[in-house]
Image (cartoon, rainbow, N blue to C red; front, side, top):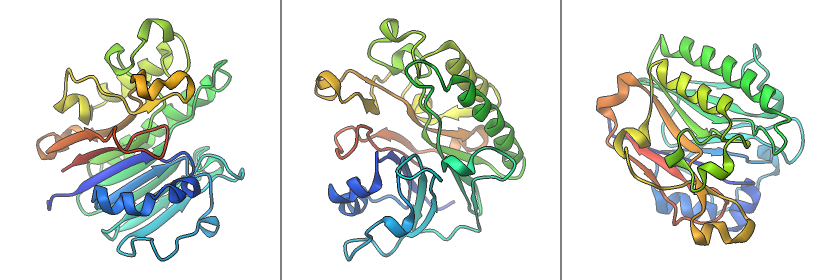
Length: 254
């Protein structure tokens, strides 16, 4: 396998991201593939402009609801197949999944549901997670998978600045954390924690109370990979100095 750099980033609105220099940041970060979440737009609403890096092919799955959710994958590599959502699951209308299949792996760009402050969408999220894991397992039986995206959960206490205060809150409920544990138990690896078992670094910060400046954050953006790729992963990183969203880009090199 030729070395490939993949970056995932919840851009919190791709049109806002473009105004903040997203196209130049793509050049600066130098990835072969970008997985963007929370794009909040259809492709025909996005001003690609002369600054757009033409070497990338782009694939979109917008939500039916305007200005909500959505994922897009930008790749220098030509995928063998692109799957937008899945008709057997409740993914298409919220624009949460896009799959690009390459020779040696299938890449899932996923924007997982947020359980919401009052946990009003926790049941929805758990159903989504269950269905997605079943689907991932089917894909994985054919070739290794890479799941990139905003998982909207901190797995362990090391993955957020204030675990005790946030116990039971959205993104750190027992149910969400147990599902992530189930995902890993099914034969998948958290790439960052695999290579950086004790490193404290976050990928998301609240806009409130200067959380990013104080580094009161959460690690909720991941690259989860098939165990078959364990020996092929060279780097896993968080680019927490890159601004433009309340999330930081995360990445791997394989």
